[in-house]
Length: 635
Image (cartoon, rainbow, N blue to C red):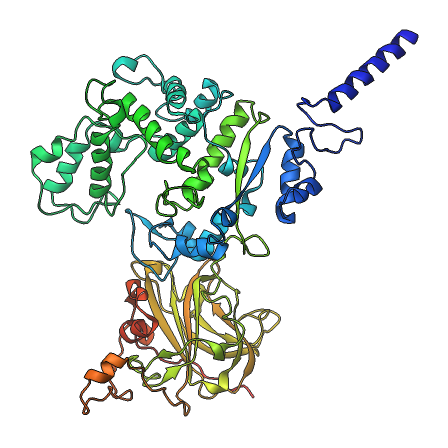
C-alpha cells in the first residue's frame, strides 16, 4: 500500500512538472479545461479575445485549439498592413468590380444562385461571373473556421512533417496513383517526386499534389499533359472550329497559323496549368503550352541548356518552383491568399490570383485535410494565417439564397428606388413615362409557395408592374392542369392556393407565365400586370403559382406610373449645350414606337445578354410586349 502511494505521488509530481515546464507540448489543467501554454499561445476564447481576436473568431478558434492543442493561429490584419486602405468594402470592390472574370462560378444550375446575372458573358469556356454575395461568403474567413476548411489558411511552405504516404493519399484514385514519370525519373513515382519537388522548391509536397490533382482531375486527360497538344491545336484550327465542340467552347481563330507552327508544340507538358487561360480551349491550350516552352530559365543549365518543360518531371519540378516563387514566397502562402490575393505585402494584389474559381481554395483545403486525416497527422503543429478586415459585416456573410437584392436598401420603401426611363418600352400598357421604383436581385429563384418581399408599396401610385423573369428550358406553364401565373399578394404566409387563404383574398393582381425555351435561364421574359384599378398600400410580396418542383427566377421588378407623373428634364452636359443648335429638341417621349406584340401570351423572349446594358437601355431595347391578364381592386 505504501509503495503504491509513493508511486502515485511520484506520478503526480511528474505530471505537475510536465504541466508547468516551459517546453510543455500539450497544455493541461486539472479541470479538463484548456489553459494558455507557457509559450503564450491563446487557448480559451478569453485568451483569443485578449490576443486581439473578435468574439466571432475567438469561440471557434478556441474549439479548434482544444481539439488540436499543437495548432497555432496567426491573425493577418489586412487593413492595418495596408495603412487603412484595404477595408472590407475596398477589397470587395476590387474583387467584384475591378475585373469581370476575377471570380467565376460554373455554368451548371447547381451554382445558379451564385451568379451575377448583370453579366451574361461566358468566361474561360463554361464559367460565369460570381455575384458580390457569393464573393462575400467565400471571402469571409469566419465561415471557414471548422476542422476541415481551416486548411484554407494553412501555411503552404515546406514542412518536415510531411511524408510520402500523405502525398499518396492525395493521389489515390487518380491517374498518378502508383504511376511513374519519364526520362531519368522513369522509375520514380509521382508521390516520391512530389516530395523531391517540394524540398527543392520550398513548398509543402501535399500542397503541390493537391494543386495538380485539382488542375488535372482524376483522369488526367488534358491535352496539356498528353505531349500532343500541338496536334490538338492543329485539329481545332484546320477544321475551323470557331464555336463549340464535344461540349467545350473552342473558339479557334480562322487565320494566322500553319500546321508546322502549331505541331511544334508537341512534346511539352504543363501540370499546373500555368498560363492556361482565356476564352475557348484553343486559347487555353495555347497559353498553357507557351508557358511550358518558356519553362524555368533558372534551371536551363542544369537541364542541358533548355528551360522548357519537355518531360513530365521537368513540368512538375519547374511548375512547383514557379508556383512557389510566384505565389508562396510572395505572401500568397495559403490557399485563401492564392484565391484572394489581399496581403498588401504581395507584389500583385488582386490581379495576381492563382485561381478564378470562387471555390478554388475551398476544394484544395478539403483535399489537404483529408490527406492529413487519413495519414494520421492532424495533430501536428500546423500554423494557420487568417485574414481579417476593418469594416467586416457584423455577422458572417451567409451562403447566397438568390433572393438578395442588388441594392441592400431596396426593400425599405419602393418609392425611393432609382428612376428609369421607360418611354421606349414596346408594350400596350407602358407607352410613356418614368418609374421611380425598381428592384433588382442578384438571382431570386422562387419555387411553389415561395414569396419574395417587395417592400412597403403604395400601389395606387402606379399604372402597372413589370416583372422581368426567366424559367428553366423545360418549364411547363400548364403543369398540374393549371396555367402558371405570378402575382402580388398582401401576405407573405398566404401564397396562392395556400390553405390559410383558400379564396385567395390576399391576391392583389396577377399575370401569366410563359413556357420554357432553349437557353433556359439565359432568356428573360417580361410579365406586365395592370394596377390601374388597384388601391392597395402596404407590404407587397411577389409569389408564383407554379407546379411542385418548378422554378421561376426573378431579375427585376419595375413599378410603372403614368398617373400625372412629370418626367424630369433631361440632363445635358456643358459641352453638349454649347454645341447644340437652338432648333434641336429631345425626342418626343410620348411617341408610339411600339412594335406589334409577339410570342406566347403576348410575351416575347429576349436573350439575357441584353441585361449587361444600362437599365434604361435594357428596358428600351430588350423588353418585350406583355399584357395584363387579371385585375383586382383592393380598397
